[in-house]
Each structure stands twice: as structure tokens, then as C-alpha cells.
Length: 285
Ligand SMILES: NC(=O)c1ccc[n+]([C@@H]2O[C@H](COP(=O)([O-])OP(=O)(O)OC[C@H]3O[C@@H](n4cnc5c(N)ncnc54)[C@H](OP(=O)(O)O)[C@@H]3O)[C@@H](O)[C@H]2O)c1
View 1 (cartoon, helix red, strand yellow):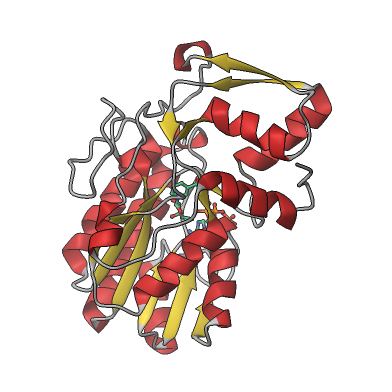
View 2 (cartoon, rainbow, N blue to C red):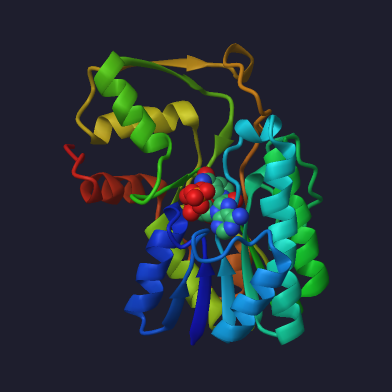
């Protein structure tokens, strides 16, 4: 299949392009230097000329805290940019897969969110990604929306790399322990996305590695597997760790729909973390 991937130099895009190439697809891997998705005329011209059969849209404004002070920039990329791509995919009647986030939910309660639950974002980034979902649903018949969370991979900066750096430089970290969710390892997610894009099982999905944890538990497991047991990890409440953007406390996401539609779930997050640490040469235990 001829597949265009936006955000191809980003954390997810890097591994997704590898996975798709490995499966023998004809991949058009683009990033902001090739095409700024906020310019409709350019988007239309580029995609029409490239003639893809599907677009996997990974490009996004992903700086969650900075978004609170840069609402316009965030909305331009995540809402208008996504809308530009959706419009062209809709007009060409090709498949579009849009990556979204657990941050479309308000984080209340403890029940895992189902894909059809009502969104109610509590920060600017979440709002912009939800607006992106709406334009995709509106303009594209053959759409997939895949909500992911707590992403880590070799091709970007992420929580795991930050913890390793802070652990080495300071020997102690304080981490929020009352936000619960699931990490998502980009090579594992890429397998699912590559499985999905060749089907016509359109709709909204949740996809993360299996199992739940808090950021505190995630940090403890990082240091355990990296053989850095000497690092002191202190649990904090959300209120004790003020940041610009509000974060949902409950980011549990139900993956039942993957089973129902015949897709394989991702492996356990601890296993994924181990493979990631191996990949970046930090695995000790
Ligand atoms: N990271 C997470 O924890 C997380 C969680 C949930 C959902 N997601 C979603 O998953 C997807 C992939 O995330 P990621 O972590 O791989 O993101 P990422 O590493 O930040 O990559 C996003 C890419 O999009 C590019 N981009 C930004 N503005 C653009 C524009 N106007 N035109 C074209 N390209 C543009 C970026 O280029 P520059 O670097 O030059 O700006 C970057 O290469 C995104 O849709 C994100 O919203 C991520």
C-alpha cells in the first residue's frame, strides 16, 4: 500500500516508518521541512501529487505545558492542520489514521475510558486534539482515530529518558503518584497501526501497552530495570507538583475494542520498557 506518514521524524513517526518499510509498503515519510500542514493549499497540492492510498497523521504540536501559553500555535497545528489533511483525504476518499490522546478525557473516576465515552478535555493540548478528532470524523469516511498515552520511543524525548537523566545527575526524583495510565512504546504501537491501516475496520480505538501504573510506579520500574536502585524516588500528589497544563488523574483506557475487532493488543508495559532500555543501551536488570 502507498502510505503517507506525517510527523515522520517525530518519536512515533520514526518507528512507524521503519515498521511500514519492513512490511514492504511504499512509504512517503514527511515532516515539517517537506510540508507545513497548516497551509491548506500546500497540503492539497502535496497529497494529491503523492497519490497515497492512506495517510497516517502523526504530526502534531505536542508541547503540553507550552500549549497553555501558545493556544494559537497549538490549535493551528492540531486542529487546522489536521483539518487540512482530513479535507484532502475526504475529497480523495482515502483512509486516514489520526493519532489522538488520553488527554481528550477529563480524568474523573476510576473506570477505564471506552472509545465512545464523551470527551471533555481539561487542557489546551487535549482540546486541540479533540477538535482534530471532530474534523477527521466530519470530513473522512474511512477514518481511524487511535488514542494513545504516555508515549516513549528512541526517536524523541520522553519520560523514560528524562528519568534516566535526572537519576544520573541528581540521584533523586519526585514523581506524581495519583495519575494512573499506561505507557505506550512506539515500536509496539507501530505494529498495531500497520495492522490496522490495511483493514477497513474504521472507527475510534484506544491503544497502549498492557497494564496500568502511576508515573511514580513507572519511574521506580525504570530505575529498577536500569540497575539504578540507588536513585531516591519520592511520590507526590498532583497538587504538590504544579505544572502549567492540568493533567487527567484517570487515564485508564479500555482496549476491549481491539479484541472485538480482531487486533492484537500490545505487550505489557514492563516488557516494553525492558526492550526500550535495551534499545538505548541502558538495560541492566
Ligand atoms: N508523546 C506523547 O506522549 C503522546 C501522547 C498521546 C498522543 N500523542 C500523539 O501521538 C502523535 C505522535 O506523537 P510524537 O510523540 O511522535 O510527537 P513528536 O515527537 O512531537 O512529533 C511530531 C512531529 O510533527 C512535526 N510537526 C509539528 N508541527 C508541524 C507542522 N505544522 N507541519 C508538519 N509537521 C509538524 C514535528 O516537527 P518539529 O519537531 O520540527 O516541531 C514533529 O516532527 C501526535 O499526534 C501526538 O499528539 C503523543
